Length: 98
Image 1: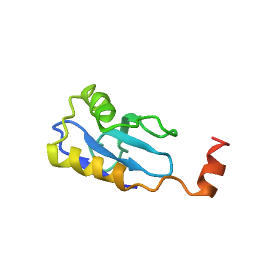
Image 2 (image 1 turned 90 degrees about the horizontal axis):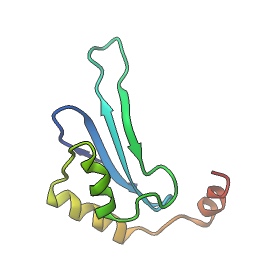
Image 3 (image 1 turned 30 degrees about the horizontal axis):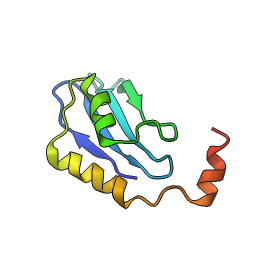
């Protein structure tokens, strides 16, 4: 699994590749205004098997929140996909229950 921070003026944004689920993921979080409250998740995607299977698909989902990934990150995510080994037999078996 990979996870990368994407600079954004309003949100904390994380993208990555989840090899066992065979999907790219996106997490958009509004930081807490102070230490006495918790961050608020605004949006997340890619937490079900094969939900976002291409870097282009991830870029499309990111565009909903005006998140633009730098080209080097787009390339790293493509490498993560290319170098992925997919789920193990046990992970494939367990995915049937979710």
